Image (cartoon, rainbow over the protein chains, first blue to last red):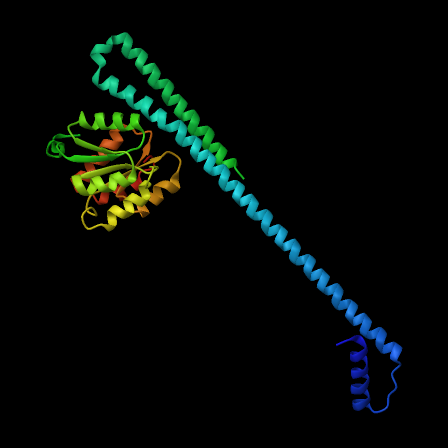
Length: 137
Length: 144
């Protein structure tokens, strides 16, 4: 319905209900324009609010995705470091258990040093990765 | 391990581990303690071998190719032929969620990598002995 049609419809309604109260067409037009402008402004505000909410939702999703990716990378680093460490420590223990005589006292001592260094490396890896995970966003 | 373990020594363990060195190392250490060891390199082969070999126990890494350990555990526990075989899950240190996931997938117990052989052997022994309660007992231990 055009503003003109709305104007004459309202004019007729008012006259029907209230008798012959004369309403200046200009006053009514100004009123309708104001109502229409208010609605348009309201629509624009609503649209802006919706866009803001959507932008925030996307930002939260991106942050969550980035956090997931960081954790996945830390898990992967952990796995890649611990797998060979598991082998290093395991073979050291196996040699100590099964080949102690053949290694001799000096060889055994060296082997224990390798084992100790491996354990220290493992503790270092665990400590650094645990801290990184705690501090990851 | 005491004398009571003698009867368990011929037990057959299926070791499912994709890393060649860890597989070699752990299978040799288990063999040196008298266990029969059969190995699989991935989850899919692990499931097939559990059916074919009917092992007494499965020791399975959780991060495996083809089919991961959690999925393999679910398949094994859903199958009539394999559901009674205890599964000991190996998960990486610090990944608490992985351990919880392993129990949810039906694993009977878990241990962390890098392995600590005496702790692992005591868990293997307990699961082979008849077991059940052990997983709950271990969960209460602060260091396990």
